[in-house]
Amino acid sequence: QVQLVESGGGLVQAGGSLRLSCAASGRTGRGYAMGWFRQTPGKEREIVASISWNDSTYYATFVQGRFTISRDNAKDTVYLQMNSLKPDDTAVYYCATPDREWTLPTIGTMFKYWGQGTQVTVSS
Image 1 (cartoon, rainbow, N blue to C red):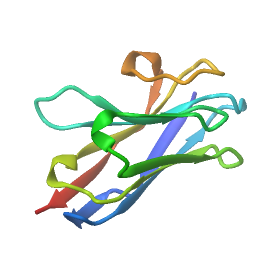
Image 2 (cartoon, rainbow, N blue to C red):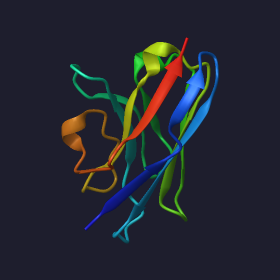
Image 3 (cartoon, helix red, strand yellow):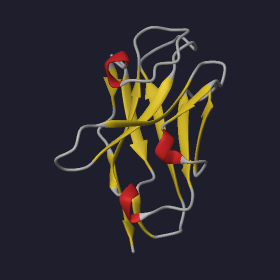
């Protein structure tokens, strides 16, 4: 069973930065994409960014160049560097990965496994 464990959330002031990490375990293939989503109370979960096995990336339009997704294939870990954070970025951030290799998924239904989430709070 694939497991995803996120870390790196916390409280930061507007304009600050945070780096989220997500380590995958329980699988042997290296062709799986990984992604980051976020959700606030009363709203649907939305994609933030995703990255393929060969480092192709997809970003939501609201990222506007502030966030960078990257991965370390040797560690099967994905990162989300978030800069110029705004109060509107406050949310629970989730890591996710599909069960099919060699894809770059961009919507939630294309992902199979999810982490437990990590809270990001941006104060004004």
